[in-house]
Amino acid sequence: MKDGYPKSRRGLFKYDAIIFGSIEADFFNADELENTLEFVSQRGGGFLMLGGANSFAQGGYGGTSIEKILPVELPYQNGAAAAAPATFRDKYKLTLTPEGLRNPILQLSAAESENSGLWDELPDLEGYNPLGRAKPGATVLAVHPLSEPDNPKIIMANQRFGRGRSMVLATSSTWHWQMGMPHEDMSHERFWRQTLRWLALNSPRPLELALDKETYVPYEQATLNVEVRDSSFNYVEDANIKAIITTPSGKTVEVPFNWSSNGKVEYVGAYHPDETGLYRVEVLAHSANGDFLGRTESAFYVEESKAEFTRAQLQAGLLKRIAEISGGRYYHEQEAQNLADEISVMESSYSKLVERDLWDMPLIFLLAILLLSIEWYTRRSKGLS
Image 1 (cartoon, helix red, strand yellow):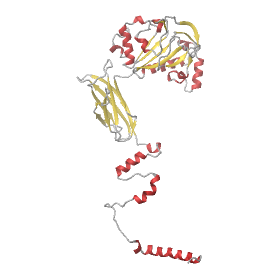
Image 2 (cartoon, rainbow, N blue to C red; image 1 turned 180 degrees about the horizontal axis):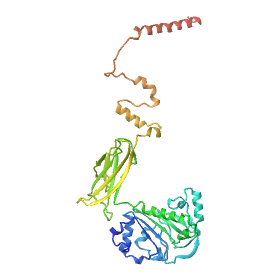
Image 3 (cartoon, rainbow, N blue to C red; image 1 turned 180 degrees about the vertical axis):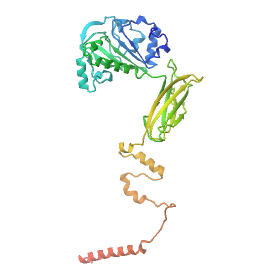
Image 4 (spheres, rainbow, N blue to C red; image 1 turned 90 degrees about the vertical axis):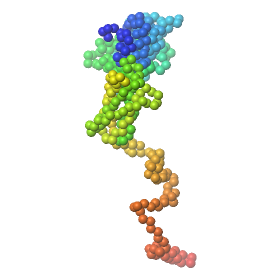
């Protein structure tokens, strides 16, 4: 920021994430701090405060808008933010909590046991800022090794705040991980890449497209939901939205949008794909007076249903629906004994009804005589006749 910290919401909201280092709260005016709070809660950006001599309570952030963002409380004494100095000579090994070991930010290896070992090999950190308790909903990721169950010395924690995310790292000495390890070790770089990705990756864009699914079957409805915001990230309620869908065969189709009826400020479009393959979606938004508001892209895939192979259990509801549509009737296996009695003959252009008296059929007559003869012979041979 060559011109200093942005003075307006519009200028600040151009960014995806903000990191405060060791800089005192008095450097900012009240409006800038309030804009930072709204940057996280309304714009959906990420915020990280690092440790240092002028961070947290030591930097005078107690009672400011920034304190509301933090996932931890600042220590208070006698109703005022404690000004206990940060420690700078205290060397310690960062201790990950069980939640921290499983958190994507702190994954130096995919295997949990190997990940724990890699963290144990990293050089000691030096110094930290005393913090208060974790706020409800926050996740404590790492602590000082001298922490106690009822008095944790939190070093790293994060949380969701409004539409955005916030994190604290109560030290400024992670550079030890870079300087104290062989040059080919990438643990320090990986940690910061993953931290910044967590802070910034989910920050919403002014124009956002959401599909209700990633994969559809042919002729199934694909629902497109679009949210539009202006440069201050306020919802735009009179935008003109146009989606252009490119089918797998290269044909383009324009999808109109309407207001959603579920109370949200969003626009909804529907499309029924008829080909299998990858569909690409481009969405353009303009204001009511024609100003360009933004562009975004997405994609979805269409393939034949595999439900028959992935859901082999009885689908009674589906079978009843098929029977109803086709004019039939659904029978459970426990009702199978009634099936023959309930089958009725239906005449159609493909059938011919013929009625015959069974006793007039020679074959049936001979069969009856044969059965009676066998019975008579059996009874006579046993002396019963």
